[in-house]
Amino acid sequence: RKTENDALKLAEKAERCVTARLDAIRVRQEVFDLISDIDGVEGEILYQRYIKLLKWEAVCIVVHLSWYAVHDHHKKALAIVQNRLDKMSI
Image (cartoon, rainbow, N blue to C red; front, side, top):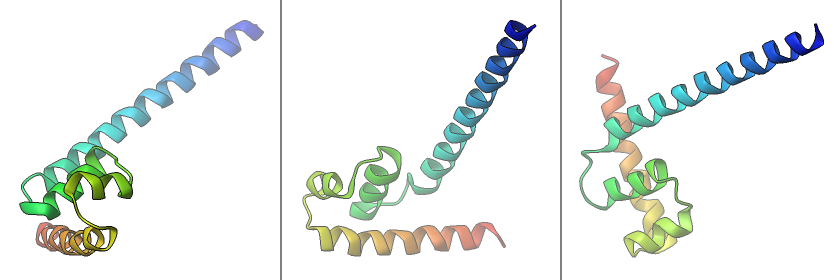
């Protein structure tokens, strides 16, 4: 009886993990679709940070910009994304 309960709990936990993984994949695809055609350094910063999941220091190295410049471009990129989201909700 205990073995059956343990097996059931394990199966439920595995199912929750699969569901969580599929949700994460779906969200990542939504983010990719939203940012994939943003041009220039803004697009590259968004891609490196939110798709490749690089830390800010690594993003700076990849795009050959200072921490402050990267964050300035990131702010501009987020404005582009917000504008797209606003248009989608109309």
